Amino acid sequence: MSAPFEVEDMVGWFDLDANRHMKNTAYMEKAVACRLRFFLAHGFSPEEFARHDIAFVVVRDETSYAQELFLGQRMRVQLLCGGVNASGSRFLVVNRILAEDGTLVYEIRSMLVWLDTKARKSCAPPAELAALIGALARTDDYRAL
Image: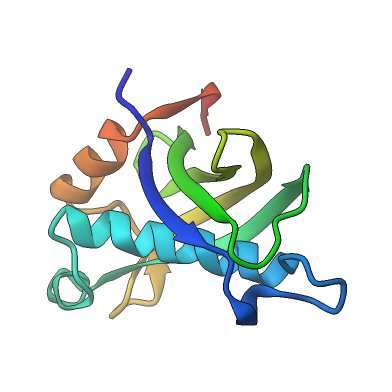
């Protein structure tokens, strides 16, 4: 099994809530940034998505919170695949946010659908994107959707 795609980040001033710890929307923003960095790292810029007339749309998010992070603390944001349907048009991505010591802090499970941006309907991805999602590290509970 391959290692999860991972980026490092830090809790910034605008990531905080009134309790002075990282707010839930900031975790979501870190997850979204990780996803975009994954695609960029593999040659899929916004222009490349546009060239294929395709985009991914989040249709559901489920979050689990385990521990606080505070201003200046370092974190690792991982991206894994939790499942794909037979056509590849729907897939589950899992972002795990880990403290610097590797302790799980937050997990976001997001159902994504590939969208044909011209027809405005779900579609199977181009072969390159299907292969990229297929090569992602899988969660222990990975399943066909």
